[in-house]
Image (cartoon, rainbow, N blue to C red):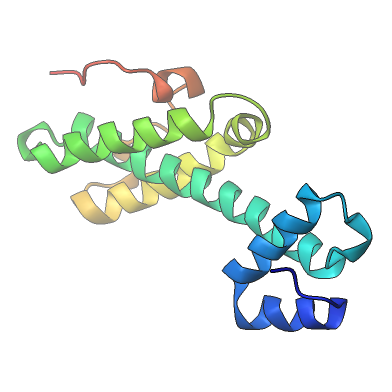
Length: 150
């Protein structure tokens, strides 16, 4: 059931976000835009957008870190590295199929690579200079369903 006032909706947002979302959806479905909790709705949508961008960035860091470890420490290769690479690719393919998140990925790929290189340096014990100075991967290469190099 829809909460009756904006004050009640605002309180619901603070108390039970899922119930608040249900109420927002019901109001929107019934064309009751004037009753929407617009202040909290705007905050919620901005938060979702920010979260999605952070998640894509983080997934690319994780993917590239494992690809660097795979390439530069072949003697340490494991099923968990391979699984991590496949999982990150699968998730990123879904998230970056098109649109804003794909553009975000493209725009932040170099920064994500720098983070991946730092993490790979810490995890492998190799000098940072061992890894390429600039991102050796294109967005399409990172998202491709290709076999890992032997």
